Image (cartoon, rainbow, N blue to C red; front, side):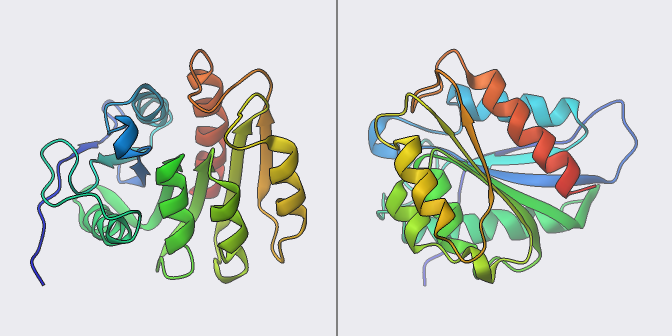
Length: 204
């Protein structure tokens, strides 16, 4: 199988003593112009850096300078596995303290790999689709889990999602942020604050 080269940015906190826990961060839907430079992704990375958590954000296949082409969330799972393995082995990173987080499309990719994500201690899914949550196997994931959505999200209605969450065998922590929509415009800092607080506790 042809190996793809993916574009990414790894950030390690400065001015703090390592080694550090690390989180792989997955961006939103490529066909809607989302990539690793999207506001919500950058906000997550900055907030984690302040908290002493290293981050690896990357462009899925076919995005930016990453090889390949869009594969509807299937090939992108391989991209996420590769990113997790890269972060685990990186110098200065605690390979046994790894989390993964995704926004929208990236959140669905995170949920689709959770049953097979070996050694990952925590996951945060931001604005995942209801179908992505419904088919995910939270009961197969041994780590801590967070779902977060805005109450003005028209693509992912929070009330519908809450019904799905209550029906899961292993229910994750579930946060609804007032006034936030699917893009998190104007609410990126609130979203990032919740995710970072969760990761700091889960990866301590």
